[in-house]
Amino acid sequence: MSNLSELELQNLRHLIGGFETSHCKMQSYAQEATDPQIKSFFEDAVTSSMDNKQTLMKFLQ
View (tube, rainbow, N blue to C red):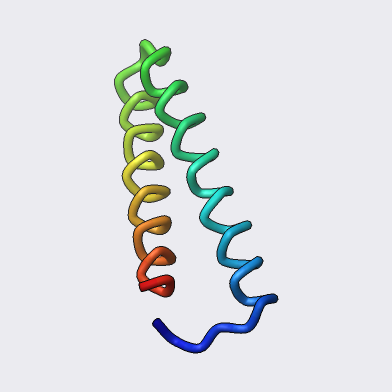
């Protein structure tokens, strides 16, 4: 793990939490969508938010 300051760790925690929240919301929206294009849009957002979260998690290893 890199030597991260307390502020950097707090920022990472905040960003990771935001992507987790976004992931859950987009997943819910995708499940409720009936229009295929809108459903696809939200499914792409689900993937993107999870990818971003995983990228940030690497800083904690």
